[in-house]
Length: 473
Ligand code: ATP
Image (cartoon, rainbow, N blue to C red; front, side):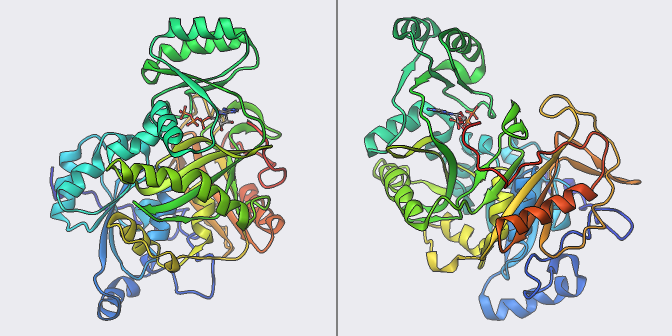
């Protein structure tokens, strides 16, 4: 399919809710170019002379994370055009949403070549595991994200354990089983509860932290029956506070972003079922710069070195899920892309040319001095629909987004759609509301004030994001 399949992006005009919130978080910086037509016309001419080539970007994904990426990319002086596949209401503000399936790599390459795409940015993990970056780089188009070989750090937990062992990275000890009967027999003889993990990608449903042996055995049987459970891991249980540290990586160097803590359970006080994430805060105060340095030095850089040594260097975003145990930070998991909603709290805290940083990672030439952190805190509160994380009703009107007029609040679309009558719910997680402030309390107050003013049927959100640090979900 070619360019004819590109649909015009849904322009959010006055009267349709969903546009007024795209305010700059920093009122002293330049206006939000993509919603201002004068800038759309003049900006390329002005900047081409000063900063070199402008870039067309192809962004893959459709969640709040992708809106946050588009929002940040579109602020770069080097940004020209965005194509988002499939995109969502939020990405559509900055460019064209293109309704291809992410699995149709030929169509994506065709689109990229026809439209002169300079950089591919991949949001979710599945296309990375399937090798989209390999295909784009082979075609001469730089891509922000790891190759399939490097993406195995997330797509195979057994592989990640093997790399961590080779690199001397602190992590829970684990045994890998190729048959559930072996795992069951081992669990029975050990007679203790285990953390049971499916080896492959399971969309957040592949881990059971068991409290007793019957739960361990039931988890082995259940996970073995899933596509991700061809291999199973039984892992020692660790105790401590969790946090995540993400870093940009160019194959050699790591550039850490502000540490974040996410809230996985549906209900306040870590109650209810696990979700893909109900909120995030960043930076996390109990992670001092010294501790962040330790995490990079002991948990992340050795893995990057080991991947390079193997001839499969890691480029893109390395996300370490960590537990701060009594014997120091330990890795729970690696992800190979931005977390969602973590990206919605972290990206508004960054200053500097984000698009250029992504490009530099893709071509193996990261310059850490290009990144600056905004002072202060970000609190992202996810507004979910009633049934989430189960089935939820779609199509309910969303009111109040347009009325949020606070420069320190950014609203990211996740599961929304635009109908002729206005904004509608269209998924489980609907919006991410990020409040910024000089203190966590101020950022939190802003996020919650906005969250309360937005209305839709069945709206559900946690009331304690940024209040109590998470311990364990
Ligand atoms: P999936 O593979 O299904 O996408 P995931 O990648 O989110 O899941 P992990 O991050 O490894 O899986 O684990 C999910 C959660 O389980 C962690 O955030 C943590 O709370 C808990 N957990 C994982 N491993 C351990 C461990 N060894 N000890 C204690 N808790 C753990």
